[in-house]
Length: 354
Image (cartoon, rainbow, N blue to C red; front, side, top):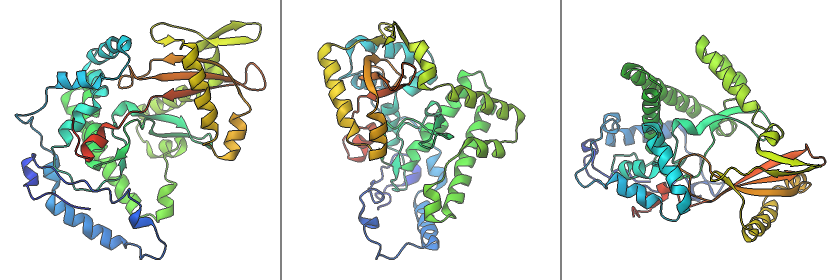
């Protein structure tokens, strides 16, 4: 792991060398190596903070050689389905928050020029506010967490935090909040982030790996009445996002035979050739699952596949929805398949900003 490359971190124009010490496996490849003590980790963190003080993370000005954002958006569109690009642009221009959602690459370009400590965990890469929410854990418990990892890659932790707080402020403006309220929300977000990290640093290593924010814990930690009501509303909505409840909304048919309803250009049917390729890929997917899950999912039968436009950043990429039927017509599961491209974070971590 290395720190800054010698430039003044407070200037806001230095780049740090990002070394994947936390992802290359070398440090964690043997039980015979001595563990790094907590006090050593604290000391190391403080030494990095002297090189990259908190104040260095607060400033940003557009450099004179900054890439044109419009040109960057056009480059982002390369390799996507041409017929869907107007939909993506339409969702981006609808609001500043919509633009932020669709431009993780632009923020990554800007972040790559900013000071960073050099600590490189696996980051989300697209940790804007809209990518947090409720979803069911493998144990079917409702938890609150990140739910989009298309851009995940080893990178600077500062990038995730910067994108998150920027999205909090922009979302606040979008919802009509005052600038002072937006500032308070951002400060609260950063404070919660800091408090959570301090708490995790004091926990045993095994406890950290089981850390999650489930619904009951979220209720206990929330004191504001309005926020408790919002949590209740969001949780109720999340519980309704199940395959069986989606069945009448997304499908049509009679006589026990169902198919997913087309809604061009947002939901369209693939060609016969594409259908077969996706079906083969789903069969191959079963082989990647733990045996007990493969046995359960393998009991379903593929009924239909459509291409479905999702989100903002993913519009134009291949995204499919597969309907599978189990032991009865109302025993169904929807599977989503999304095209994977190289993370925008990876381009900058590996020095390829093109």
